[in-house]
Length: 331
Ligand code: PMV
Image (cartoon, protein in one colour):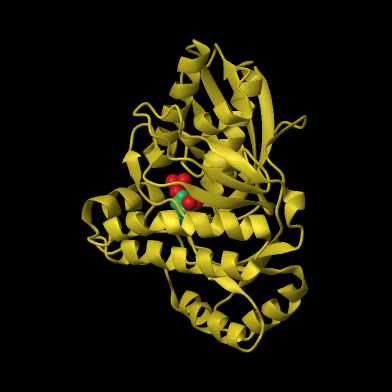
């Protein structure tokens, strides 16, 4: 009844922002991501007849009320329904990076929890089914089940049974592809993605433009990844991320995740590109900037970033592997 899993975070190259169904977590559009090899969550779950309620600890902090706790219990309810069991669970999770700061910690955490629950309760779910289960914790978690480059399908069915992720290419497909996470703030964000995207769908007048243009980005990204056309992948990811942030900024009330150091990077990266250093940016629901580049340019890019004020740390990631069960438990 106890199992542990380790899962890498993923960063989207074509983003997901907005749900068709908030309950079942069905996205408005497909998204494409890279699973990283540098940012991971480790989670241990134990289902126990003796527990009176679910217990949750994340990075040595216990939660027994509030949004984090409620979301966890809702996820475990989905698991319990699948398993036909009513037992409560103890969940302990650790990340090797900042949480709630736009670094996809919930994606790694919920994918790890889904994988560990599958093992602990002998659910025998395959990876496609696991990605659908992970989706119930955090939409982007569906993509972290797989390694390499991954697409999550919005699906067509009302019950979400065709909204799952699938690997496009494994991590060996493009071994010198890199994402450098530039940390510009270590503080937790004010607006969580779940609440933020709901507000965007409801209030941003730009939201329809995001949806109308995302299919073209998906096609360009699929082509760029297939042909390993770095410029096409980089340009598409950068523009797609700016369009997503345009919908965030035009939400009522406005959601602006960027800080001064974020802006410094956004101004500098295109300039470095003009000077012949090919790199692009992408950003999620937080102030961190992920620089997309090739391995040969990592050192020069980091040296350049160090000249900018406010960039406090760097995490270099390459395409990583998918979810795996581990023997070492956290409790
Ligand atoms: O899956 P969530 O609820 O953590 O939302 C993720 C949203 C973005 O990170 C901004 C985009 C994405 O596709 O990962």
